[in-house]
Length: 509
Image (cartoon, rainbow, N blue to C red; front, side, top):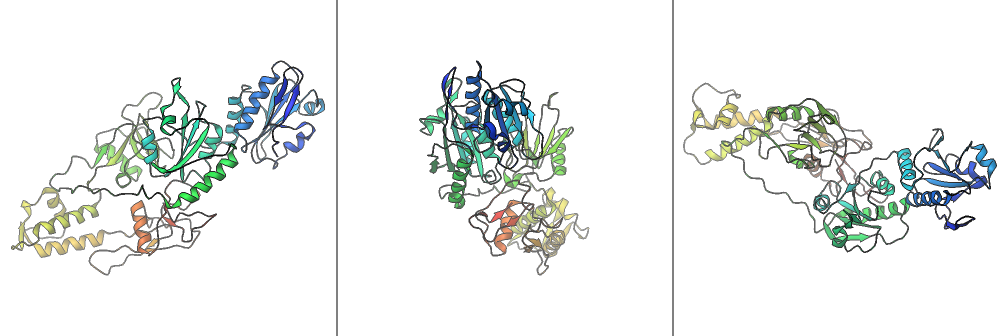
C-alpha cells in the first residue's frame, strides 16, 4: 500500500517530494497493525522546525532503497497532535520501530540519516549478507566460480552495498543458484575501470550472466529498482539459465600418473593465503582428517574453529600466524563454496596422494599387474618391489618366503579389496552390497520422496559419487545444484520431475 509520487507544501522549504514514504496521519493504527506490511515498519514523527526538511529527505531516500522490504510512514504532529500523544512522542523528529511478529515497538536512537534508517531495517530483518565487493583483481575468480554459476552484478554510485542488494543475496529462492557481486562507481576518488569494461554509462545498473560467458549477459532495463521487482526479474533469469551456457562447459583435466616409488613426504599440502578453497576432489571432508593433515604437516592444531560460515575458505584451512584478535589455528568450515581470506590458507589432499587403504590397494594392484603383464616368469622377488608395495603385501595372508607366485598374489589382492569395500548410498539413494564378482560393486536405491536423508554410514559423501549414483539408476543428473542449505536433504538427492515453480535442477548435493 505504498503511495506513488506525493508532493507536500512545507511552509518553510516549499515543495517536498515524498514518493515512497507514506503520509499516514490518522491511519497510523492500521498502518502499524501486524500483517499489513510484509516486513518491519518505521514511522517518522515530525513538526515544522528547521531540521524537518533534511530528515524528511533522508527518510525518503531510505524508503526508496528498502521499498518492498519494509514500510515507512510519516506523521506530522502539527496536524495530528492526538496521534503523536497516543504514541508518547515527546520530541520531534523521532522514529519508532515496529518489528514483525510479537516483538514490542521501540524508539530508534541512531542517527537521523539514510544509512541509519536502512541499517535499522537490516538489523530487524536479520538477513545474511552474501554479496562480494569486487575489484579488477577479484572479478575473474568471481565469474569462474562454479558453486553458484549465475552471476549478478550491481554497479552503484554508493561506496557500500545497498540493503536491498544484501537482502536479495540472502533470499532463499535466489542465493543457492546465484552469486552477487557489488561494484562501486568510484575507487580511490576515480572512476572504477570495471564500469568501462562492462560499458556502463549510468548507475545504478544490474546485470546478470552465466559464469564468464558475456554472450549470456542481460541488463535490468526497468527503473523500478525495488526488492520485489528485482527478485521477480532474477527468478525469470534463473529459469532461462537452468540449462547453463554452451560456451562454458565443465572440463575434467587429466591427472598426472602417480608413481609409487616417488611418494611425497606428506599426503597433504597448504595452498596460498587468500585462496577460497581446495579443488572439489582434493577437499578434506572431516574434522578428524583436518587435524591429521595439520599434524602430518608439522603444524599446531589448537585452538581450533569448527562451524559453518560463508566468509571463510570451505573445509580445512589453517592460520599460520595467529594474533590476539584471531588466535585460532585450525579452521574447518562446512559451508560449501566459501570465500578466500588473507590470513587463512586452505589445506588440501595432495594430487595423486593415496589417502585410503582401498585406493592404495587398487592403485598398487593395477601398477603391479601392468608391470608384470606379459612376463614369462611366474614368481617375483618381494624385496625388488617398491617399499610401498612391500608394506602393503605384509598385510596379506602370504607365506614368509622371499619369492611368491604371481597368480596367487593377484588373487590375494583382489580378495583383500573385496573385503575392504564399503557400500554407500545417496539421500534418495541407499546402498545395497552385492558380491557377485571378485571386486565389490556399488548399488544405489532411491528412498521415498520427502525422506530427510540416508541412514548414517550409507550416505554419499562426494559430488562425483552422487553423480555416478544417479547415472547408474538410469536418471539424469543435469542441471545440478550444489551448495549448503538446511532446508534440503543432506548430501545427495534427486528431483525426478523438475518444472516451473518447484525448480529445474535435478541432482542436488
